[in-house]
Image (cartoon, rainbow, N blue to C red):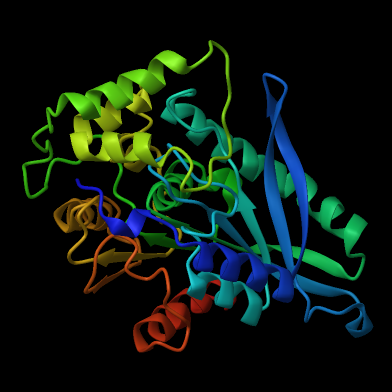
Length: 338
């Protein structure tokens, strides 16, 4: 687990992604829950091509959980939100929802999972009224819901599909380099990377931990904010990251628990992984996919490996062959009759 230049975010990309979202989508932000007087919001994007002149129209829904090791990120974060996912939402066209959630170490990783569960309940209870109050001509098609997420967001997407699908009612899952589960053991270093004991890194981690006020809740930290803290955690390795995750007495961060509670046939999944990933090793994702397939033999899992590091697909577009192939697979389940 290392930190490289990919975790920096150039101003040009931040500005380009923001401009693209503004040009192609209308946006509202709504709170789906509140914790300690802190609203936790979902950003709802509607493609501008969905004009009222066409009359009432049912529209599929694509939900997005952002990456950032559960430590940083925003809804959406210009660094983590890949270009091809934006293209997918726009060209489908779909109602696109990017979800905030509590971040560690102020909260526990199980709180992030709790937020995901609460979001799915909110979506099925309140999304239709929320959308129609702003876009009366649109009807969210809650029988056509898919989820996408990269890195930590991919982890939340996988756990949603396995732990929460009785509520989420997902038709399809896109999970990019998602294997943050705390019980995965396969890795280039047997699952526990040697801790970088540079005292400067530990000082950065401890300094941030000591600055946290009891009861504080943090839900939005777009990169490069807290980049030094994130970098120190990642360079120290998996044990320090799991330390940031906090207590998980019930094993909700494990793949074992998720598979034990999963439906017999989980929603179809497309898992993506870079073969040179320096943050989430490819062997970890291999293990995750193998366990899902072996313990849920009727699960449909497409596994795509591509050359590149963590976030290999950030600048990819739908026109690329591998993306077209995977999107065709996803749309067959998300939008089709399968």
